[in-house]
Length: 217
Image (cartoon, rainbow, N blue to C red; front, side, top):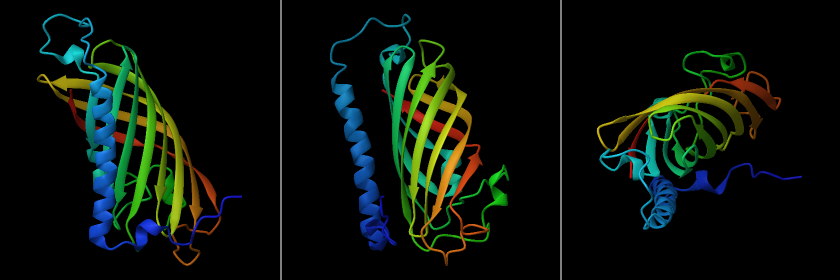
């Protein structure tokens, strides 16, 4: 049985060191994207003609405006490794003002103490597999996702499936809108935190939303 520390080492770090860890995670995501980009030295046949280079772009870096509004500052890298398939990974910093519950009140306000905010910052990691319905970077997609959020008081593991729409603005900028439905396993690590209405570990239905802006390359 895995034993989780009452206070993960990350949250014990001073503010500047926490920011350093976040920057290191971000650099890891960017470095990983750079390695993937290096594999593109041999140009493939464009998916459509004279598109300003969009058809050759297989990498995208994004930020999620919706999650930023909720208090999660994450960077996501997506690799389109086939015409219809892509994988994305993300790493982020969770602020003390992070909302465990949905700001629009879907499902989870029933279980959370909505007046509670974490005492320390936390971190997040995520991965998702996306299935596109078109060969270019504009169109409908489906996805399966998994995310882990870690605080001193609680941790969560989210599993969801859903879909969305992505479109390109100009030659390189993209906007992505999405919605999913899934399950969150919420574990309280500190019974005095009152992060849950009661103190039992729970499986909670969730409806993740995404509003992303990104850059293709």
